[in-house]
Amino acid sequence: MDTEAQPTERDRTSLPESPGPEERSRSSLPTRIAEWLPGGRVTLTLFACLAFLLLLSTFVVQPFQIPSGSMEQGLRIGDRVLVNKLVYRFGAGPGRGDVIVFDGTGYFGDGDYIKRVVGVGGDHVVCCTKQGRIEVNGRAVDESAFLYPGDSASSVPFDIVVPPGTLFVLGDHRSDSSDSRDHLGSPGGGMIPVGDVIGRADWIIWPYRHWTHLTRPSAYARVPAAAGGAHG
Image 1 (cartoon, rainbow, N blue to C red):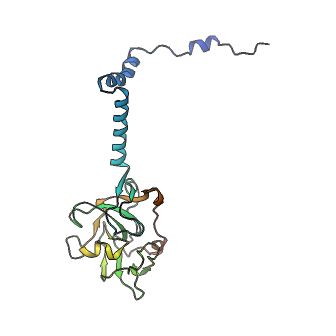
Image 2: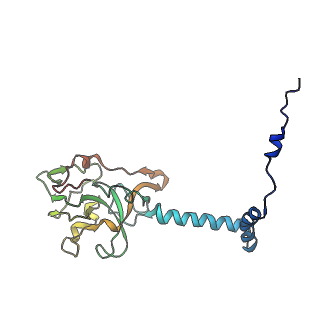
Image 3: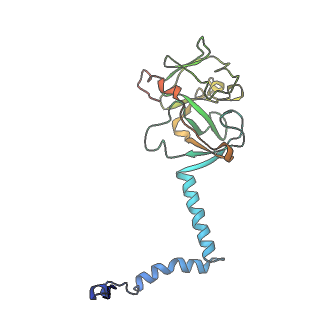
């Protein structure tokens, strides 16, 4: 018995028809552009890829190169990190322990900087305790998991309350970092406005031997909320 399916009249009427004038004009637009460009479709495809990467870099993620040793030993000179630019746009702001990239113009100097958030708006940050640790909202923070070996929490004592909408930031290599401590007497008191944060560094993507997902240290999870209700 011949069991091969045969097209029915319904099948025949549902077959695609030749495109009408409107469909032809729409589909021919990329072809016309490709014909106009030197290199044709290859050049058009390249431009499309570049436009996609530009949008991605502008609004979603952006690579940054580490220029100094201020965040060693976790981030080394020449490392490239991938910065998440959306993470703070549709939810909570930067939290204690996050590694952020920010525009330091007018606060730290021209250019972008990468530091770790130690205090958020409303936090009372003190250094140092009798054990040589930074204290946030009355809780000592054990920074041994990321602090550069041999460094103290800070050679500069401070006792500050972080103003709302700003951040107190430090480098992990405290003896080789210019950070909020060095600008306590400057305009803004060394604090970084949350609005100047570009994003959170989530991954080390180069060199490949150093590929790492950057996470918030657990030590900050035990820090209580500030008296005004700020959370990290």
